[in-house]
Length: 153
Image 1 (cartoon, rainbow, N blue to C red):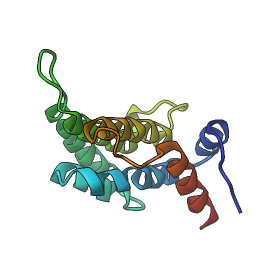
Image 2: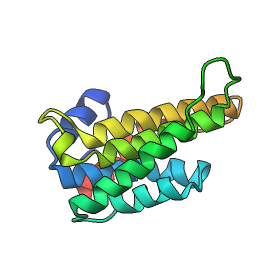
Image 3: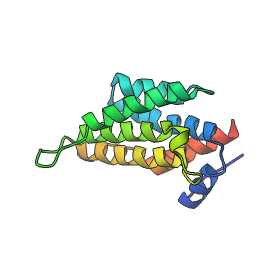
């Protein structure tokens, strides 16, 4: 039975997983935030694509472009008052895009799940700001549990 209790173990474990498992984990890291914060069809489609074992390159590329578009649409422009919830959604879109990064754009050292996890943490931070600290989530600890459960199944 796997237990993940710290950042070093979390990151090291993620780097041992093949790309397909990294994509599936990225979806698990993103899923809770998406269900709480957005119904953007582009992000939901991206999440479904991440959850599809064996999704082909064409489907991944299409979903990647779509979630990248969503991330641009939710990015706060300089000089505007920040909409913290929109920023949270922006980072959810980036997390989804990280998980969907097309294979031809990846370097050997890239880790889809790690990148998605970091963006999901940013989304959680902005959600906490938007709700004035009423978010009850410790995102890294939640991600450790998700990874441990994934490894134990």
